[in-house]
Image (cartoon, rainbow, N blue to C red; front, top):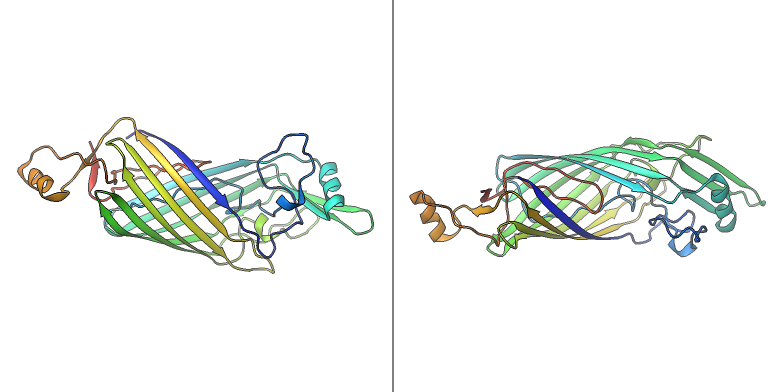
Length: 311
């Protein structure tokens, strides 16, 4: 099966303890004329799970009982470059500043269908940051700065997805997940300074996520996912990264295969029993193989989904 997909995602990062005006802009690069970040936009967001990466749309589908799915996702984020002199100038103006050239987060996920409506999964990965620079004003008109390339394994996510509804109108599933601090949370700069939690491969804290996903086929080849999730982050090492909210809509078009319904309703059940051609059912979604793309990065999954198969 070959498909194309398009995603529209919204990421919200509310301020929280430890998320404030002590570091540089973590938004995509502004015009070059705006060299000095505006204080009201400055947040500590470099590491995995902050603004440094794409947002993945939550699906309403679950794996069929006894089936497995494996996926590999890569998120590359390129930030505005700052030289040591620029970082120190920003630190003098605002008290502190940090930036990173680019980051790469690679994530491996595995899921298993316990029942047709319950799916359990694990995911973890590896984080790399390139040319991280931190500058702090010393209060006497001077600046101390240092750099590094933080890297290491990320935390482990344990999740459960329960499908609450599946009919001709589509699939609706609820997501519950917990993040355990199994990754590396003690990366240091060249001068020995310990990085803040948001710039580490691991935040060092337990996090909790809830979400709701909806999926359906709009035509035999065009499908849609829509999802919303909220991540509650806890405090660790005297630092809190800040909560995260994700909203996403994903459209996909299957280039090579239609989707056929398998035994939905009395008429299609009778047709299946008699050996006739299976009825098309474009309004509910579960292909035998699915791939979901994010606004940045990619994901590939395999595994039979509930009640439908490829033509």
